[in-house]
Length: 390
Image (cartoon, rainbow, N blue to C red):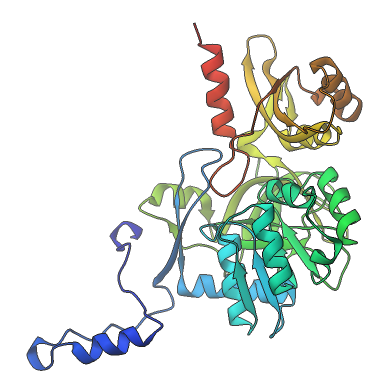
């Protein structure tokens, strides 16, 4: 089982250091045993989920599954030898790590941002002229709004990939004005690698998370497990050679997530007639208000369109009458006048109707997970602390 796998079984050295170590190693009976041959199903990478909705789990990929992750990504992005990619997010996350390794496997090169801030990324854009850029939405907002960014800094990019959190329309609009093309929003998980992406040679439908990457199959199912039709919302199940082999030392969670070769993503999607997927919300994050399901990302996107709003995080607050109320936490842009709570609520209601928040709280900064996603657990803890404060 997964629990029996060591965290570090061996290390590979890519320098003359290994030759020096081998030359100095004892010979004869005292010589160390040869390294065992590696099998395709041997563990290769272990990632921990972001923990944005619960306790992080150790996602384990085999050599075969991770090779499939890289192969699919190379084909999906049409990566070419001689190109360069810029990883503007943490390589502890599978999205960034896979992009870097896919570039090397394709004969391209990769630059990794040592800090995820506008100044660092701008320097790397000018120095390396990458064809592909990967950044999470919050970091992209900072980059695109930085007064030091020049139009020529983005001139070499043919694909800008973003995901992890919903890419707001406001960010799409601002990026398109600066770069001349839209952000390629993707969907993926530590458990699968990149599952969807708009094909570079095809149409990028702004607001969708693209089409299935090579090697992937998808099934959208209702609560009874029955497949839904085109345009209908359903829970996304995924099948691919890229699927993880399981959660580290957690066979129960593995069995609950992978059923008969299909992985339950926990995400609600719909797919249009052309095969483009549209993210509708994460099951664990759905807010139930007066028996109606409300997707936090939809409310966040509506509020993010307000010119004074910078970043937004939406959660549900327990309410004895309505089940849950919608509360939005947000940060404001310093160059805009401060709107009232009533103004922001009315602004959201004009766009999403009954889904608009009942409460809005302004924070000096929005809590983010280590990989740059909105930290909803931190927002819930903040709400609980306020509720129980003396």
